[in-house]
Image (cartoon, rainbow, N blue to C red; front, top):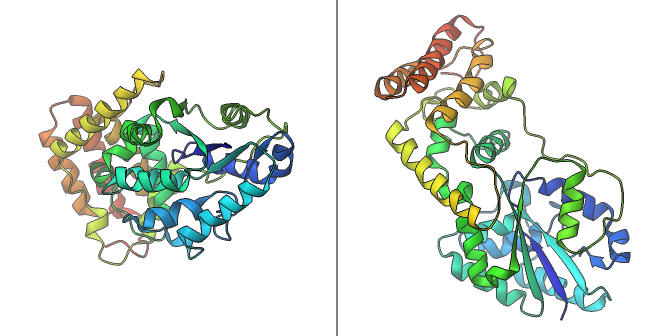
Length: 343
């Protein structure tokens, strides 16, 4: 029975860089005994196996991202995978896509993951999952999605409405463990991109790294100095739904508690960085987004009112002061040169 390593991400843990390395060095890795299949790697995602993950996730309620476009059906994609693996002499294969995480986040994750397990029945499956501290994951993910065409709300609203399982990560681990067996799920701790990334991932597949070349850093997170300005510049003329925070401190705190409780469970399986997620940390990050934008464009004055209202409810002095500083930046921004797209 061939051994199949299923690398499921997580998002924002260097997956794109690792996938680029594997695709570029597929021939060399094959000589080392590890097959990086072509099946599932299509025009829209030539280095990752999103063509396997996304069609299957779509059958369970996932809405494919715009960049994916169209491709082979689930049957066609997995049929091509089985044919390729059956025709190759390598006893090990690696498929990699962070989109496999979506199977663990859909409405019925056990049903979706059982469907994946059936598709991979001919193989001995080992799951590899890299976890990241929740605040760093949240801020990096917000920066990533804010670059897209879909309008996004304020950072605080985004934090309040994110799927907590995505950020706490232990539910993802637990659901894959239920399906494939706890002993078949390996966790790695994210520690930044660099040469270690290639080595650790390949050693997880019991493969000696093929090349000394460093994998390129892909999907670079935008800098804080321009992110908010870029986000606001894409909004329609009257965009209160995206420029005014509606989340309450109570809602945010409940979200933080859910995320941190789930993330803490990972410490039973892996030594991880302690969570830095808190109300103060969220407010400080939002401040760092707002401050540079306020120097260059007028921001929605209704958001200043919202920040002052939140400050009145804040029991923590540091939180209150940060929210008031955000309000002050927004109020001072009214003298900045107007930019299109801000109500």
